[in-house]
Length: 98
Image 1 (tube, rainbow, N blue to C red):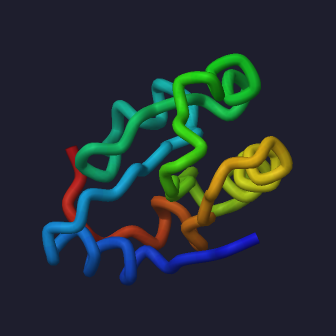
Image 2 (tube, rainbow, N blue to C red):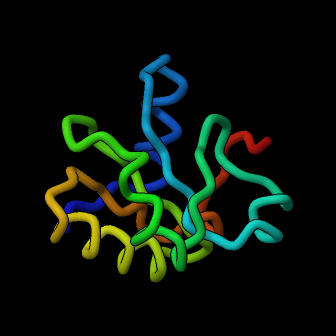
């Protein structure tokens, strides 16, 4: 499984890179703040909503601490998606939130 740090994600966003970020936390957790532009697909719904994702794109998976996003990354990778897990999750995120 590929991994990226929150600092690296923030740097890419600050450089104006268009990132596909999937936040797998529950809706109430996301309401407390998410990375700008991130799409919320709770971990329990990934299996049912994977058809919304494009296998030709790269996705950065995010959760609170990196555990759930790791599970989502492993699952999506097994389904043929190109995914990277953000280590440390939102607990380690120091960038802007929305």
